[in-house]
Amino acid sequence: MDASLSRDLSQALKTTIAEKGAPQPTDGEFDAMVDVARQVLERVLLDRGEAFAEAVRSGAHGDLRYEDVEAVVDKILSTSKFAGKPDPEVLASTVQGLLLSPPEDVRTYLRGLADTYTLFAFMRETPDVQSAVVKMFSDADIWLDTSVILPLLAEELLQPHLRSHSDLLGAAVEAGLSLYITEGVLEELTTHIKRSAAYAYALQTREGGHGEPPFLYGAYRLSGQDPDRFASWLENFCGNDPESDLLDYLEDEHRIRLEPLTAFAEQAPVELRSAVAEVWQDARDVRDKRNERLGLASMDVSTRNRLVSHDVENYVGVMMRRVARGERRSAFGFKSWWLTLDGTAFRVHKRLQMDLKEAPPASPAISPDFMINYLAIGPVRGRLSKRSEEALPLMLNMRVLDAVPPDLLELASQLREDLADLPARVVRRKIRETLEDARKLLGPTAAAGEVGLTEEVMARLRAQARTM
Image 1 (cartoon, rainbow, N blue to C red):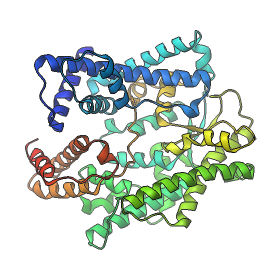
Image 2 (cartoon, rainbow, N blue to C red):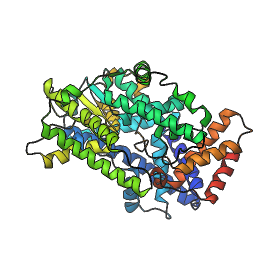
Image 3 (cartoon, rainbow, N blue to C red):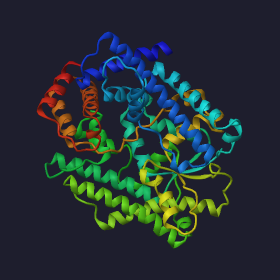
Image 4 (cartoon, helix red, strand yellow):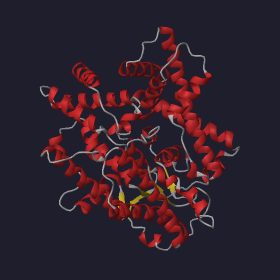
């Protein structure tokens, strides 16, 4: 397995170097580059294990942050005697790609390495690993944010072995955890589906469809699918009765049920609810300024207030449910949690500590990456089948909901025309692979949705699609 990892790491580096047009290293420089990439890979796994162990020991899960792969690359390069001058982006892109989507022959090995480093980190934090772990919840009611559900819908476009978000929540259910959404989240999901359908229709009829594409439409196009069949694809989730249909899909496919938190949220002191709402209003202000900078329309006040109220219901509702049910046992002993990808959720607790006179209740928010470590190491691990344990992702793509640059959608359309003489499945694969190469080539700028592909890059990628 170690030999397979070295081979795949070497091949991934060669591919990334070619994609980015980086200078070709000598044989000696390349061998050293593979060694550094391996160091980065293992340091990332160790750092993530240390962050998780420290959070469990201190009970400060709300402050849990995993260091970016790019930061680890910079740290390793600053201390290593490297032959030549490697491109940090090449190393970071290679390692991150391997962690997000490892080949089947190395997935089990990397999963074992990740668990080993996490246990090693626990042993450095506390002499009694068992006592630290058993304080964590062994059953839980977990409410899911819209940011967690949308990737589940998009993963219907992927092969089963690539559905990391689905694997994570499937393992949670297998471990005995209960998954829920609120009515506010259900409303956001159905609204997003309708908005995606309207965007696609406007493009087809040339009546609009400008600006940032909705997440589901962008994910559909980036997967190489035929844009004319987007409306048919949405019927996987809902039809004439969107909310009921979507609930049926979520329960049938992912065991996610509807459970409101409004009654619990309304039990909170007005000062607490107002302070939490203010944090999300401030976050919306930041997004509006970004949209203004990009020339995009700002959200209307009514919609904005509804979205803020949904976030407050989740955050405060889970808090007050804990109080109402007397759940306090330890920092990780609560039964009620809110699973979210929204970075704002992890900043709320610090703001409340500054804004409120009394100490606020513990943060209810946990991230999907935290859940990965919990399922791999926590007290529920023994409930997972061997297959589910090995299928746990190593890390999740936290940029999954980032904006898709319109230029990439334009490239997808051009590729579809260029490759029209090939079988449909080949066209989908070539578009998908070429757009993935484009995102790697363009890096963080593409993720921010602010990139403009030059004609030179467009031509190169189109030629690449023809020959790959």
